[in-house]
Length: 299
Ligand SMILES: NC(=O)C1=CN([C@@H]2O[C@H](COP(=O)(O)OP(=O)(O)OC[C@H]3O[C@@H](n4cnc5c(N)ncnc54)[C@H](OP(=O)(O)O)[C@@H]3O)[C@@H](O)[C@H]2O)C=CC1
Ligand SMILES: Cc1cn([C@H]2C[C@H](O)[C@@H](COP(=O)(O)OP(=O)(O)O[C@H]3O[C@@H](C)C(=O)[C@@H](O)[C@H]3O)O2)c(=O)[nH]c1=O
Image (cartoon, rainbow, N blue to C red; front, side):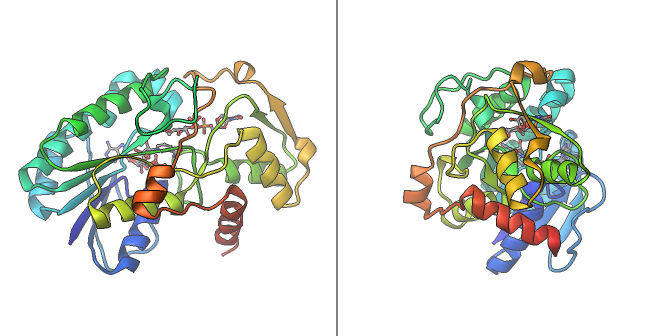
């Protein structure tokens, strides 16, 4: 079975590659922007592709004719999306349109990575049936991309996930645990919000959820996140305690005082009962996730 993933230099991508190879059932084509930044180079093909270019996307899919596409590539910096709406739309919606059309041509099973930010955060946690109502441009772009996938002629799954954490080589976006750990180790204060609630997701669990969906070609919407409902402040305090760092360096603040360019939904979090029941998905607790991340940081 040939599987093509987009965004392979990203947090999810770098965890999907080894998991798919370990599974043994897949010939893996990893694609990312520019050179391959994942240190492991054996047993898969890497292709550099600009997903915003329709011709390049068509050429890529014509060349490999995958059975399954996992589309994780995206402009995932929420504030950047708010400040640069055209780039956000071209990347998150345009690229999805090109990939969906190409998938239709080869009847490829299409797995699209979406987000809790499709919701307004007024009534979390959300199920797969909850009504979307994004409050920032990133969320708006993901809703538009979800619709393209939902209306496509090929079979599909839409995976919604939440605040993904883990270790990644040469990262291009921030990551909660490493951000808190690095600052506290240098004796620097971090200001962390305590009025946003999330079900943070260990990147290994998200990759496993995608694999479970791919293996069954399970169609429809799937919530794939962690199971603990936490604020970023809770996450920061647990991180400080785990690494035996000074908790007084973690300052509790409100979202209003953080004043990020894009609005964040207050309470999201996802109900994961469907994934547990239908896929056998078993996410780690945040405490278990911290232990895994710490192990990788020390490796
Ligand atoms: N991280 C999170 O907390 C969450 C993520 N998601 C979604 O899950 C998916 C995976 O997330 P994650 O791995 O964390 O995100 P990352 O930002 O780590 O990875 C996304 C990848 O897409 C690549 N990309 C961006 N633009 C292009 C382009 N024009 N052509 C080719 N590649 C491009 C980026 O390349 P480069 O590295 O060069 O910038 C990046 O490697 C995304 O769709 C994201 O929206 C959903 C909810 C939470
Ligand atoms: C930068 C910063 C963030 N935070 C909080 C706000 C937020 O809840 C959390 C993470 O902040 P970020 O700005 O990195 O991430 P943010 O854009 O809020 O995270 C989102 O990413 C996209 C891709 C998603 O799809 C969402 O699921 C979500 O996880 O940390 C602070 O408390 N203090 C800070 O200085």
